[in-house]
Image 1: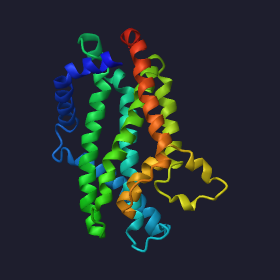
Image 2 (image 1 turned 90 degrees about the vertical axis):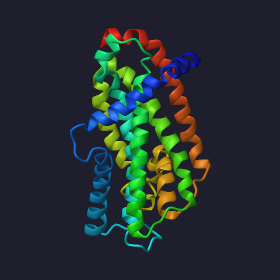
Image 3 (image 1 turned 60 degrees about the vertical axis):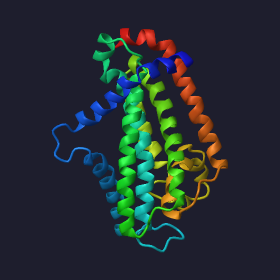
Length: 264
């Protein structure tokens, strides 16, 4: 693993230039360019908030502000969006760049790291836009916002470990991506993003509580809505799981790396 990290460090300029190139290339002919990185997730969160809050009358317990539900949904969607983008793109990156892998000699693990870096930049831009939107609702950034980098690291590491692991399996079996798409849809609805945890009947609440994404998403929701710092005990298991997945992904990738190009 140490050798892999050293080789990636030697290609750091390649990684950085590739991140810039990918960000430019995604919306090369778009007038709004990088603003689409922000507008898409904001629009999705706004739709959920509008339908559930205004039409169905959904509210967050203990929050009197009418905009509280919208803030709750946008915070959760921001956290989930980071997770889903890194996982999905890491899972398909070896197939997407199969031609490059066959023609150029470079550490193959650079590709998911490029995806990781691009997703982090997108996420920071989104958080900046969210801060502006929240200001209109009367929710201004407080000291608890300093907990967001901690949540960002945990969520992105968790997603990267799963994404690289599934990305290797996806090279040898294309069914992996199809199954993961369905699992992610179910996983989204088992995470308290568009509904508060208190809304779930107590008999079924344990299903959501054992979900490792629940405390990770709550880092964002507690910081942005309740101005609260994250509690350490609920984050121990997600942190250990993220670390284990990352090490496992590196190990599996190293062993399968020589066979991946032949399978592409």
